[in-house]
Length: 258
Length: 325
Image (tube, rainbow over all chains, first blue to last red; front, side, top):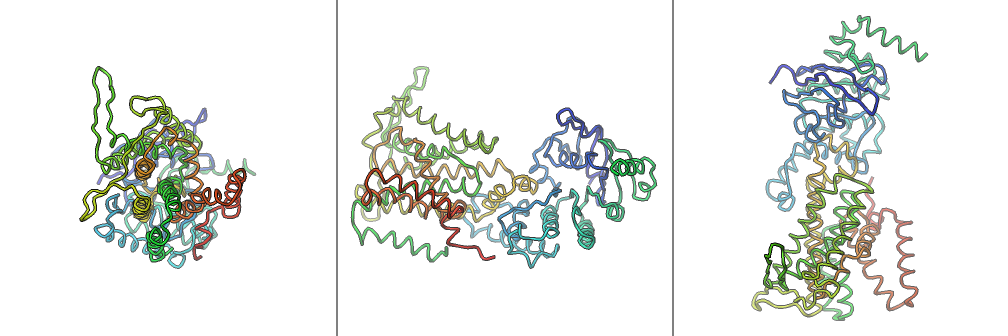
């Protein structure tokens, strides 16, 4: 395994005439939690969308495990081991929580049409294994007793946890979490942090976009700070806290808002 | 609906010709059955993937023509002075040809049309069926155009002790259609209960999320389109060898509409939906023919449809089988 899991090199994204990302380069080493922070409109979510294939970059390269992934379809990128969660709650509505978990385990199975027609062969074992894995996954995020509820009937915080569980389901090597704590109360945020730590212990590298600074400072091994489509600082949390450029960007934004 | 109830229903249908050997009743049920097979196939696309194909009759018509032409044989110019000559083939081969040709076009349409979704997809599928109708009308050398393909042989089956028997009788055709319908139902059931079906439902429920967990959109939609088209082609073949005449009107838009009504009123995305909706709306025209004055028949049909959609927007089957929550 290379020293760098994900490397973003000279990334630029234009949306119409707007420059969403001017020039972005950063790397994510394996087994770390890297956070992407910055004021609203800094280009964090755009960066996520580009890395995971939902948008095309205007220029630059994205290498995952040394291989270029820019421009690939999201499902291909997921198959390579890079899976994201979504900022807004995102579940398969109309399906139960358990079905949601099973669907998220898609990449863990390989049954095709032949297995569908001859379910007594290999497919039965695979299906049983997937169901066990789905149950385990729900257990991990404390939703085991909600398994038979329709996913949209879950409370907001529970839906967010389900979303993270689904992104982590197929054991991606890199997990991208888009504001996992948005809209959560303090105790739910604490649970969310515990969950992310737990996923890290399971060998997942995490790239995080988050507004909750306390959470970012406590979870991250490294922080990349974006402002107006550019990286203005990057380093360990302690260094970021002292960085004058970062303080200006944040306080300036706060003053402008007030 | 439980498996036992399902097989009981099939057994009752199978016993029907023995209890009521009325040729009119059997003819009505056989025609309805052929369209129910079409509706079962449409349900895989419309119900499980959520893609509204308003050209579904294209696959039905392709199956009818493929099967009829394979069993009648044909001799056409294919350019450069070459001719393609096919001698009349046995009906089972025509049936297979119908499935393969329709499935092949399902693959083609899937590859082309699933790049666009929503209204564009609907338009492409409508056009597809219309273009095929034009081809059937105008490629007279192959299809006889509006003169229709006639004298199509009836279906024949190999039966132990009897050898090959041609199915001329109503009850024989009824059983054949019932058997194919059961096979189509079981095929769709196996698919939707598998990992493939789960991927289809995931794509319908939330496509960006489905892609994020690695579900290949085009691949699964094309798989569904091929299976769906293949089954519709089989239904078309049954139609050709039952009615024994095929003209370009098999591509009429109204047949697609009929299948859509069956699926939507019965309950799209449920296994029994197209069967229940198909029985109601497949049999209603013939029931009304005996009871209502001609000018009122279609008014009643239309009103019934509107009432079903208004009061059971998710269909009859979901209203009967509530999911425990």
